[in-house]
Image (tube, helix red, strand yellow):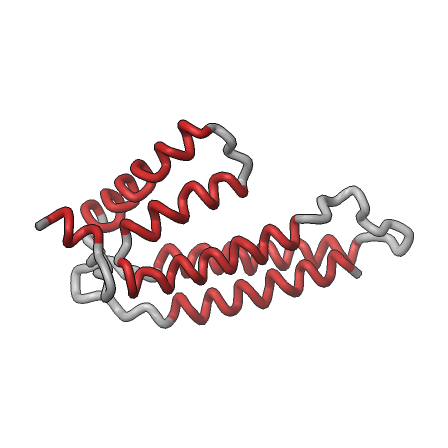
Length: 155
C-alpha cells in the first residue's frame, strides 16, 4: 500500500510540475524556451512515478517493503516544497540569491556533508547555472522585485 501511495504522490507532484512548466511564457523567435528544463524534469518524475506504480503492482502481498527508507517520501515532499519556494523567490529576489541559498540546502539533503563543498556551492552553483542558462542558452534572467543581486553586481 505504501508503494502505491508514494507512486501516486509522485505522479501528482509531477503533474503539478508539468502544469507549472506550461505556465512559462513562449520564447521570442530564435530563443530557447525557458521551460524546457522544468518540463523535462517533470516528465522524468512522471516516468519515475510510473515505474514506482508498476513496481508496487508486482510486489507480493506479504512483502511490505520495510527494507525501503522510511524517510524517502518525506525527502521527496521536502524537495518539492523547496522547489516551490525556490521558484517563487525568483520573483522577489531574482535568480542568484535564491540559487545561492537553495544549493547548499539541497546538496545537504542529498548527503553532501563537506563544509567546504557546501560553501563553494553558494558561489559555484549560481555561477555555473548563470553561465549555462543566461550566457550559453541566451535565456533572459529573471530580475527580482524586492532585491536583485544580479542588478546590484552589474551596477
